[in-house]
Each structure stands twice: as structure tokens, then as C-alpha cells.
Length: 139
Image (cartoon, rainbow, N blue to C red; front, side, top):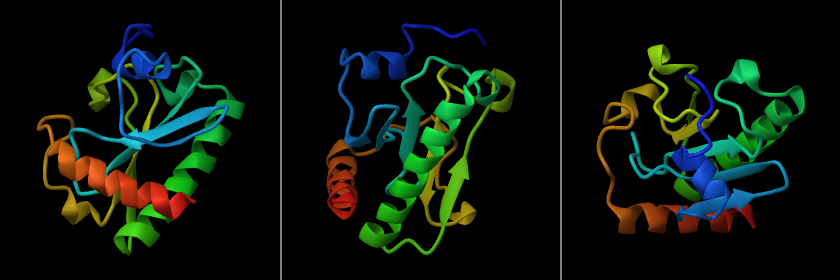
């Protein structure tokens, strides 16, 4: 899976399409997944162009994990999540649907994953409301 500069996450980073943004810094962007597998499902991406973990620089990988920790802690606080599922897929054969490295940060347990990965769009009003709660917990 080669890096595609027109993938949906690259377009988000360029501001060409909107997202329910949770957090952004110099190296990363965190936002709500619009095809959530559970309530509060978020994604963290690097601003560096890389398709998989194996193409990502060490610096970008560290930045992503810092943001993953920040988002997971906010989900725990805002949503009362007792657990956080982290999922990261590398390559189409592994189920990666967007050719830009990303980490799924999903509140709850593996048993709470109600839908298969990237198959059903969620309720946008509910996603926005959950995102606002998570963003408030980041402050």
C-alpha cells in the first residue's frame, strides 16, 4: 500500500475536508472516527506522511503515542471508560482502510466493539457531542 497524498487523512491535515477535531499539535492530529466501532472512538494520526508504522519516523511514532495517551486519558475522564482499546493496522492485508498511519483509541473493552472496522457511519450529532465531552476533558 503506497502512500497516497489524496487519502482522506492527508486531506484533513491540509484542511480540505472537515473532522471532529479533539486535539492538534505540531506533530499530530486527533479526531473522532465517523465510522465508530464503539461510542467515543477516536483516531490519532501523525502529520508526517507514512502509510504504516514501519515507514514512520521514530520521532513521529513518539509524538503519536504521546497524543494517544492524552486522548485515552480524556476518554476515561469524560466518558467514564474503565478500559481503552488501542488498534493499529499495517497494510491492506491487515485491514488498514486508509493509507496513512493511524491509531484507533476506543473507550471500553474489546467486547464493546459493536461494528466491524470502517463499515457503518455513525450518528454525526452523537459523534460531535461525544467529541465535545472528550475535548472538554483535555482542557
